Image 1 (cartoon, rainbow, N blue to C red):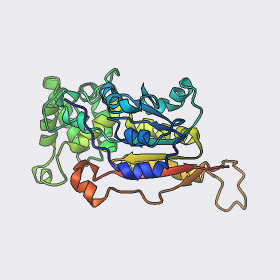
Image 2: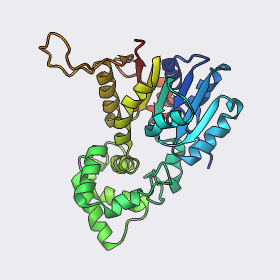
Image 3: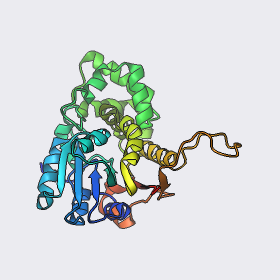
Image 4: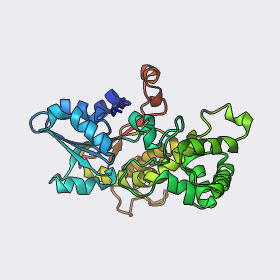
Length: 313
């Protein structure tokens, strides 16, 4: 299957980056190279683009897509949490723009062998980096009931998390759960029939939760935002596209802290904590896809773009 992914909020992200022809830009979630291609098109002779992704299928597709700009582009297999060391290895000290698209690609969702989708039967995998050991099958078959409940409740915001965790544990006592189809049926049976008719597919939230756990998505994001704002050159921008409230909350709060990191009590006349602002939040409210984009690409409906600009001091 060809790696395909329609880049969400593409024009808005490119506008947000304010690309300079001689600048250095990093796409921390390269995917199929949609955002990266538009960055590369705008770079002049002195410009450089570094693409990072942990999915080898995505890297192969992006290299092909960016082949006309290979003298300006460097692609690295890694997780964006390692961005600082990736740039150091390339002799790069700072970036004029960084973008992240935190969505799962259409290719990953539509390729049943990857195990991300609840719509087709495939192996329980869900790893974005298939070199990693932890997969969905391990989470489903070896996590204790209390761990499963926590994952499904916290990462899926699923109101029936306790019941789903209990049903999973009961089912795996009879035989291991090995496919997405088996898991979907167990989840379906855990949710009252009258509730299944509303709120989308009954397995959606649980699959999201297990995927986040397998790939440490929120942990990586939480730990990486500050490091990325530090990597920005003066006036450089960080653009982050999120797809659910858990991600968006982290980005919003981290951007706010970077703009105003002071932890002094509000009644102090002057700041004594010594924490300095890194810059400013460009997007007071997140940028949302246009109605046209939402109609063309239904997966864009939950997307939100937030932009932070590094100070020039």
